[in-house]
Length: 165
Image (cartoon, rainbow, N blue to C red):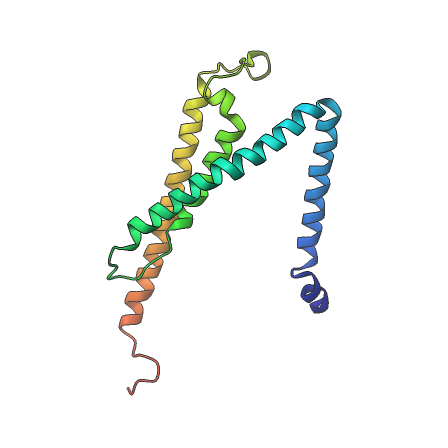
């Protein structure tokens, strides 16, 4: 097993999950290309161009800007890396918006027969999901910050390693 882990880089369960993911994605692609090959190809190329030429520079700039603004503040207490607590909910919210933007912005023909929902509910629900994602991330950040501060205060009472008692 150790030889397999050295060769592959992870355990066999990871390899099995990866193979299953590719099988499911391959099946979905075959089914999509069988129904609308041109539309799927245009969507894939458009998504790659949109991401690489527009979205990647925008969110890289936003990440660099947030980092440079918040980097210059002095931190007398222990620091907790905060960037991923903003990146993860931002990414998930953006992904939901990317998938559902025609319905969120009321740009498509509504599907009342299929969903029994009017087109007006999608924007509010996307905003609510986004708010829940950021609140959950803020709570996770606060819990992590509390654990780090509690550990730092507990370490203040202990003698330094190697110090004479």
